[in-house]
Length: 230
Image (cartoon, rainbow, N blue to C red; front, side, top):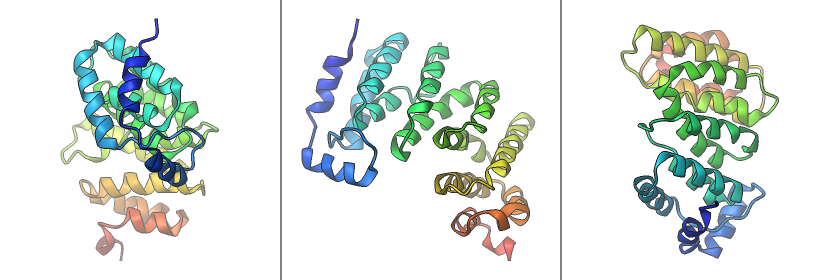
């Protein structure tokens, strides 16, 4: 039995048509925009997470996603962005099912943030993510790097996490020949974040592969290690 209506009503209560028109012009994805601000969605979904058990959250997230407004897709992602979810297999399966629908950075990045939590909770899921790296769908390939950003942030990674970091860097190498702006941006994002915690790996990557990256991506990736690349 659908449970969407009362939660959708809470989102719509904050709708701002003028803001929605501005958001549509900015994001350019072909779906309705209600004009609800991110902080409002944060507050709503925080309350829903406290109210609903895991199966209910999965059902509501699925229904919000399928309703397909900008705000309901963001809310679906936010509803599932939580470090501790037990059990979380259904959450992970639902998040993966959204990949073919990714068509714009804001929705894709919110969903990827939820994926980050599920990957750090169960790193063996990287085996599945590796399959994304060869997808024909650009947004799916991009999600492989955005969803694995937690492996850029460890100052003292354990050996297994260091192996995972190197594994993801190999994915980034395979992306270098891809000239799509969003793919190049994702490579740069991953490397820039990693450079704050593991500069030697980023310097080595850029010295070997940087010349083949787009100039903007190379500059962004090397933002914090410029002096080591001179």
